[in-house]
Each structure stands twice: as C-alpha cells, then as structure tokens.
Amino acid sequence: MIRTCAVTKDFEVVYDLPLQKVKGHDISWYWVDFYEPTDEEAKLLADFFHFHPLAIEDCLEYVQRPKLDFYEQYLFVILHAINEKTLEAEEVDLFVGHNFIVSFHKQPSKGINQVWERLKTDEDFKIGPLHTMYCILDKLVGEYFPFVYHIEDVLNELEERPDIGRIFDVRRDLSKLRRTIVPMRDLLYRIIHSDRLERMKERQIYFHDIYDHLLKLVEMIEENREITSDIRDSYLSLNSNRMNTIMMTLTVITTIFMPLTFIVGVYGMNFDNMPELHWKYGYFTVLVVMGLIAVTMFLWFKKNGWIRFHKEDH
Image (cartoon, rainbow, N blue to C red; front, side, top):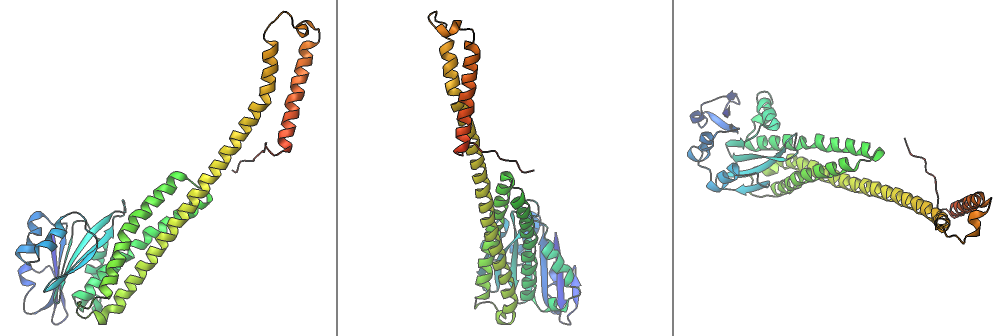
C-alpha cells in the first residue's frame, strides 16, 4: 500500500494525491509512505524516485542495523521500532530530501500512523521533512519506554518472589531491547553531530532531546540487567544454602545410624558362640544402648550446630 501526503505552498495539507502529482509546482514538500508494500510497489523506489540501489537493497533485505547514509540529494536513515509481542526490532526506512520524505516499512507502525494523522492539525509538522523525521524518531523512541517500564514492574515482583525461569525470560527481553536501543542511541549521536544535515542547527535541540531519552533507556536497561543478576545470584545462593542444609541433615542421620547398623550387623551374624544371644534381657539391653547412642549423637551434633531447624516462608 502507498499513501501520499503533501503540504502546499499555502501550508495546506492534501492527502491521497496521485503519486505523479506530488512533485507539482504548487507543492512545498511531500511525504510518501510505503506501508506493507507489494513487490510491484517497492519497485517504485527505483523507477519513480530513483533512489540509490544500495539504499533500496537495505530496504528490501532483512533487518539492518540503524544507520545514516548521505547521498547527493537526500539522506537515508534506518530506524528500529519494536514488535509488541516478540520485542524484536522492526525496520523503518526513511529517505529525507529538502522537499520530500519517503518512508518504507514492511510492518504496521504506530509511530508513523500517529505522525501521519497529526500532520492534519499540528502546524509544526508543516515545517518540512526534517521536522517530520524528528517526529517519527520521537514517536518510535517513545514506544520503547512502556516495554522497559513493564520489565521494571516484573522485576519488582521477582524481588519479592524469585522465579529463576522468569528471571532468565526478563534477561532475554532486556537483551532484545538492548540490541535495538543501543544502536539507535549511536545513530542519534551521529545525527546531532553531523555537519551535513541541512538546518540541523535549528532543530538540534529536538534531536538532543531524543538522544537524552535513549541515554536514559540504556541506563535503565543496564540497571535492570544488574538487578536480574543480583536476583539470580541471590536465588542460586539461597538454593545452594538450602541444598547444603539438606545434605548436612542427611549426613547427620546417616552418621547416627552407622553405629546402630554396626550393632545390628554384629548380632545378626547368628554365630553359636555369642553369649548375649541367649541372655534373657539381651534384646532390650541392645535396644536401650542403641537408643542412648542415637540420642547422644543427636544432642552432640545439635550442640555443635550441625543440625538446624528452619521454618519455611509462606
């Protein structure tokens, strides 16, 4: 699907112009949006707009890293949106010239749709392609925050009730966000420090604002990664401590039964020449001795702190 929008020299916004008319003499600048384009529509990037083959190749191939390329009459920018379900990066490509902007995206983009609609009423959007590029960038970056905030909420729950499976899920999600946000931060740094962008000095403060947002997002992601590491280490340490306690308890029980097993083994050999076997009170005496040995060893282990009783938290 291709949709068009143009701003006339009288600052009127006109939608759904035929593609051949967007370059009319009464048009100040125009925006063409390739929204989930077909193969035939994608060919217009070369046939109608005559963009560089390398830039077109970047649009059509798999998701590229965010970048900024300068061509003679325009600049080519690759941006990343985030898929709400998978948190994977989705590519949004922009061709920005002095009197046009062409956007290309294979997936639906909330950010672009919002900017597209606001162009009808917001006077600032009518300024030109560079400001529209800023607005698209701002919307895409703004969409990152809910995902990071959601992860922080999950981490607050995990701090109270650790779940090792969810901890690793959160770390995986943070890694996905980091792979998207960090390259976008680097892209914004290049944009605000570029001398080749026309009118950048006038709009630099706007792009700086987006860069600050990305810096904040990167800091939040790194902090959350550290928190997940602390929760994971605490969880593993607690489990290890519990396992050590269980092993110690089992070892103590085994140790207590060793002399009892020895006594039972001795008197279970059934030799004829064992006087105690025919003693009237031999059985009861052996039971009492075995009981005293068990109790004595138990008390001795407890005194030395080898046996501890823990109440489970509910």
